[in-house]
Length: 116
Length: 114
Length: 252
Image (cartoon, rainbow over all chains, first blue to last red; front, side, top):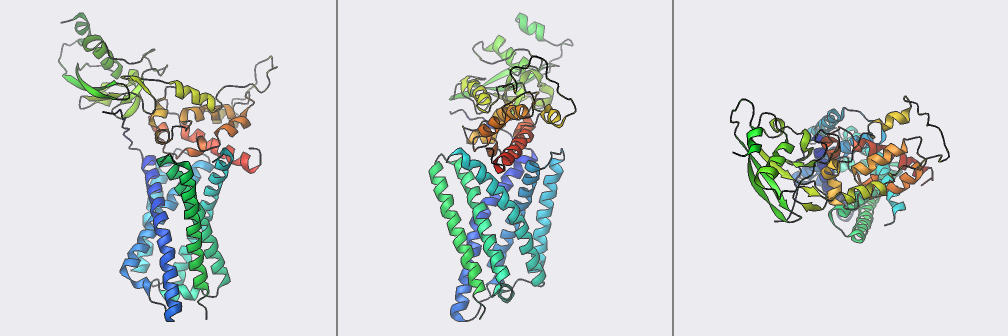
């Protein structure tokens, strides 16, 4: 068997990294779709002389909600990193992470309330 | 890629992050303010069509997002694979694609003003 | 019973049971071997490893030196986390009487629990870790103000003893073999803040790249596992700031 040391990581900064990376990847996949669907709808409107209401499509709503969740998670995680790297260090790291997550969920909920 | 480029890509990543954070906030607030009861197609068109300020905003937004995403993907690819050149190429293509898609959407909306 | 096990029996003669110890045997390839070690009242992981080597299998290879937590030689992976075996109490580490011992991660395995530290120390030098006096002609002691901002900045960085646990903990090192690593960069930062050292700008040029401070993702695994509670992540953040400023001023 090949030698492979497994690290047991449980600290919050470690999960914050993974959330940031995975949400970033998710956005890299979602954003082009977001732009593409928007452009499609516009071209259709120009052709048919009317704007099909894509925004009411439940699938679109779901996708947009997912986009919001991904974006807020990635952004709050990113702001945490900017603070970490550019501002004087504080030992209150864990509190900041939790706050970042809380803001993410709150903002997503807010959007959902407006949409649904 | 040579070492001198590394710090500039890193700075660009952080710089576009700040720009995007501000733009996302503006984008959020605009949507919530102009579409109180729900997002609608008419609302989007009414906001952007024929409006120079908004098309400029969304154009820059798309550009910043494309750069930020491309650099991020490049970092991931360089860590996960050993193919440095392929990572550079892929990120360039991604950047170009996102800029094109974003500007196409923004200018398309702008041009809907009849 | 042998003399050794007679000596190591606890004073009350109570049987505390046995530890099940999985130990990596071999080099880069190999397997975990299981040993049974009698549990003692006050027992460290180093005691356990020593017991195995002296009483069960003399071919087991491992490192230790001072055995009091000042040299860092005994660093290895204990239950999935970098530790100094001499300062790791079994009662804290293995409440269920199970131990898994493996060598440090990210370094070539020489044999069993021993790794080749050469790359680790090479990277210390590659990050500009060798002191270079600002004024080689200076005959007297440098007058360093203890309250200066720079002296405080270097405070946490100078306690490193080069044990390699942070290097082992780091996921970026695991992903990128060229990455200089937390210890080397921590050392680089301490020199950047050492007013007696004169090659700070050169250090920044050496570390401001994708194999240096820019590659750190702030996992903080280094900080989490450092037995001296240092924070290479914080030092690396300092390097990032200094490098960014230098680049924007056109000095890099």
